[in-house]
Length: 178
Image 1 (cartoon, rainbow, N blue to C red):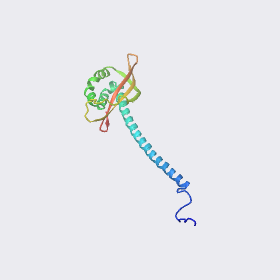
Image 2 (spheres, one colour):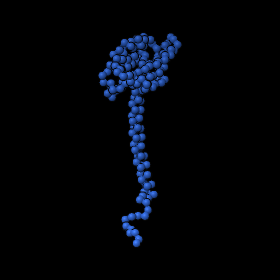
Image 3 (cartoon, rainbow, N blue to C red):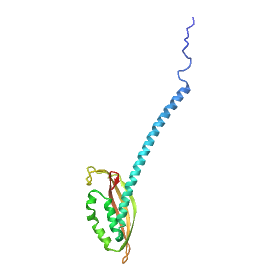
Image 4 (cartoon, one colour):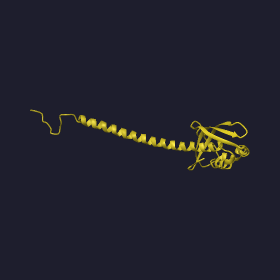
């Protein structure tokens, strides 16, 4: 007697080559979609960091430009702008610190011209733990290094070149950078 055959059995493999290939391609597609989500999220995060860093650098450059371009004709507005752009302990003592520069700018009839040579955010010393900067609401402090050159031209003397090497702390207070 011949063995009985059931009607539900197939003579070939359970999965065809096309079925296996479509499953592999589906898995590759899922992995590619997950990776693209990570890439887009990383890019958006980096773009946000870059925008913030640009604001920090711009704040430092504006402050230093005001300082190095102070002269008799703009000393009052420059001091006010510097005062408005400072916070914490520096703001408390800024008048004392700038007294010599202000006195010199008011008495000497000289033309000052300065420019920023280089500016960079110091990532190594970016945040010192338990640092007291005199502001309770500071969310973040970024250290910025600025190199600048100013030339002072007095009517009676040769031009004097001044090199400035400054390390500033730019603090984020609310939405404002100081």
